[in-house]
Image (cartoon, rainbow, N blue to C red):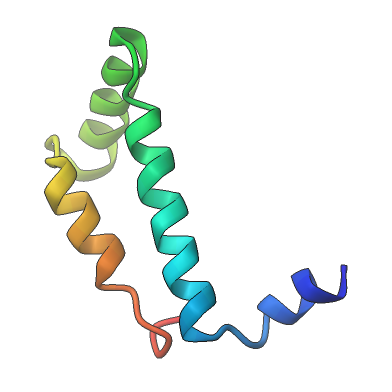
Length: 69
C-alpha cells in the first residue's frame, strides 16, 4: 500500500516506461475480437470525433513525460 501511495507523489523513469509498455499491451489485447474493436471505434468517435490508428495512440502514450505527470 505504501508503494501505491508513493506513486501519487513520486514516479521514476523506469516506472513510467513500464507503465507505458503495459498500457500499450493492454490496448492491443483489447482489440482481440470484433465486439471489442467496435467498442473501441465507438469510444474514439465519441471522444475524438474520429478513429485513431494504433500508431497515433502509441505516439500519444510515448509523449507522456515525467514532467507532464
